[in-house]
Length: 201
Image (cartoon, rainbow, N blue to C red; front, side, top):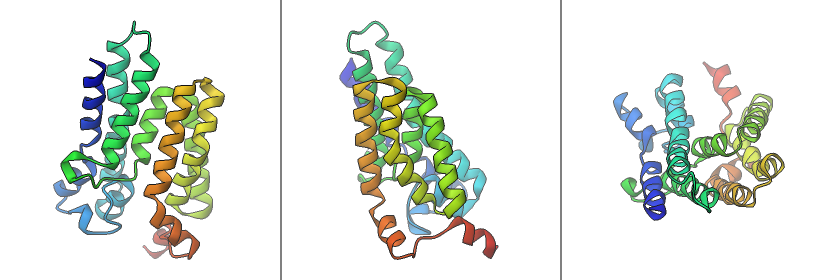
């Protein structure tokens, strides 16, 4: 059963909510803006309401498979490991979705859902750090990269779980890999800033 839970988690993680919600608004988010199916690009293209809904749906992709696995494996001796694997599978589904020929988002919202389940306190601290970075510098990507960098340490401090900390480390590495173009733009001072976008409106 555990293997089916992991496969199911991957398939749930593969659901491209940003693409679906963008199409509801008449926009293919892969063909405009950054081309990403995540909440930030959806918000830029079709508004903050649908962007926020994308954020919630993508976070639930991380939470729901882990909740189900935790419930079904309640008395299992390796419950923590399999729940973490389900979270990792859902995350990989978002990054490399089966339904979109393995071209997905950057995983930040899905990672948030995973860590809200695993360690709510660590996740909330990381959210505050993310908000602080974005408010101070105006770059969502910089906030995401900083949060991804700090999350493994926060998870370890709050839970002391090796499995969960390794999951956080792996997710952090993949988030940095998926943000490599943003990193290049940040280094060249070419990254889009929410602060500048607001001033232009």
